[in-house]
Every structure is written in structure tokens, then in C-alpha cells.
Amino acid sequence: MQQSFERLATDRYSNARRGRLTTAHGGIDTPAFMPVGTQGSVKGVSPRELHELNAQIVLGNTYHLFVRPGLDVLKHFGGLHNFMNWDGPILTDSGGYQIFSLAKLRKITEEGVEFQNHIDGARAFISPEIATEIQTLLGSDIAMALDECVPYPCEYDYAAKSDDNALGEAMPGVETSKRRNGETGTRRLGDSPTRRFDAFRHRSRRDV
Image (cartoon, rainbow, N blue to C red):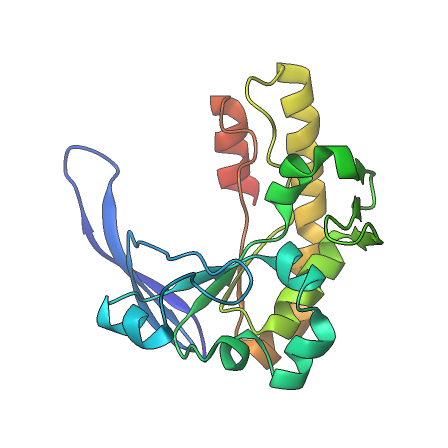
């Protein structure tokens, strides 16, 4: 199913807008509240209750799902929707926040990020292409490009390097996504990891 975004209304005094994003698993009215199902479940809330609460989309964490339950289990179930018994849209992040939160357990290179698994200490590597492939296997409706969540405060030079990396990392993932998009209907979105500086926000919005 072709994904589409329709702008329904725009505030005359600002850039605020209301819209509707259509995905293979349903529509999402924006702006939207997105319950977080880090490891394939929204803690304390069942899929039925999510529907009763009118939740239109949930979020899954690519890194945590990659670590546990792991790709073999998710592949066995036919993707994240079946695994968590959720028939609505799913957005998966790229693992970018874990680049920040697991700083003592990771090493950033030009090729991607090497992690030390926070559960058992095993080494794992995620590149832009791998992040895209993982999210494709999960069956995500919306997949995020790999980025680094920079610390705050952050020096300008560090933010500039991170922004360059984010743009460089996004393109291989985009090419991978283009090759698979016809099979999955996944919509790929970029991020602006250096939000403190206006120039980088505008650049990310334009280029990613």
C-alpha cells in the first residue's frame, strides 16, 4: 500500500499543522500521541486497551528488539505486528538513542556503531544498512534513519560532526529502503540529532 500524508489544516499564526498519514496498517492523525512498546509491548496496557484508548500507532525500539527477543524469534512470528498482536501502525527507531544512553558500551566509527550488549556483554554492530534491514524484518510502517542522539550541552564542533555523520548514514539506509520498499510499504524518516543549533535543524530538515 502506498503511504501518503495529507495536510488537513494549518494555523494562520504559526507553522502548526494538522494532518493524516496513511500506512499499510491504518491511518494516523497528526500530531499524535505514540505509546512506547520498547520490547514489543506497552507495559501494563494490552493491544485491546490500546484500541479502546484510541491509540493509532505504537513505537518499538530497534536496538532492544534486536537484543531481546532477537531477530530469529521475530522472524518466526512473521514480524513485530504478529509478535505483539497489534494490527495498527508501528514506528521503529533506529537505535540512535542507545548510541547516547550506552555511551560507555559503544564505539562510533564511519561505518556504524559497535555496541556491547547491555544484557550479556556480547558485541553487536549496527550500520545504516543493518538498521534498515532490521526494521524491514520487523515490518515497521515507519522506520527511522540511524542517527546519534548528542549529549546536552554539546559543543558546536561535535554537533557539526554528528550532523555530518547523520546525513552520511541516512543515505545508505535510504538506498536499502528503496530496494525493499515495494515489498514492505515501509515509510522511512530522517531525524535531526543536533537540535540545539538552528542551522543543523534546517539542514537536516532539508537534506534528510
